[in-house]
Length: 247
Ligand code: URA
Image 1: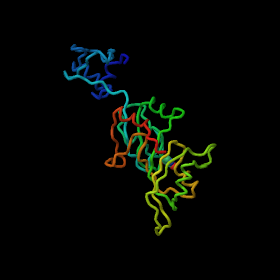
Image 2: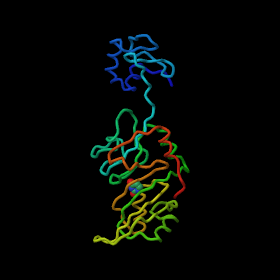
Image 3: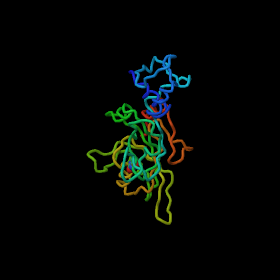
Image 4: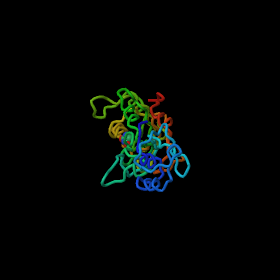
């Protein structure tokens, strides 16, 4: 890691704001390699220099953070929006450059990874990388065995090519007072705009409710309430890239 300013290192490590940590340096609370320093702008080598605050070692802040958010309906998968809450409003803003990996519609709930790790997003978008995403959906209409076969073969949703083979599972199909309704699990390995809704439309059905349950090797924990997040280690976040061959 390259040399950084001492005040930035301390602020990134959560010791205080940039102006607070400057004061801490002036108040002789900060040592580098055992010696009190007076210059908050001093360059330090985070890999080799030992920095202490009130004689306690200061641990270097992780470069990348990963939050698994249970996205609620009503917020947009963007970094800023003038009209609506964004998914970033649900995680701590301890890092610059946080963004959601992929998108969920405003009315879709469920698993969304938020990170500042651009390389991870880049890898996900690499040609030929088909990360599986499984959704639960409540659908207006009666989902049938033929629909399972059609989804497996690929559907025309108005794109140049049909959708890639996907896996549809019928959980229930019942005639209610509002007509037929079906509950399904659907696993797709693409991320076209409104893909699940458009696939159901291609089958003559309408999605009433949609929730993402998993993405790659990451699953939404049942205990995580809507609007809550869980911090992940880098290793845990990397399981996003794994795929289990369901679709
Ligand atoms: N498919 C959709 O139609 N919407 C989403 O939010 C995600 C997948």
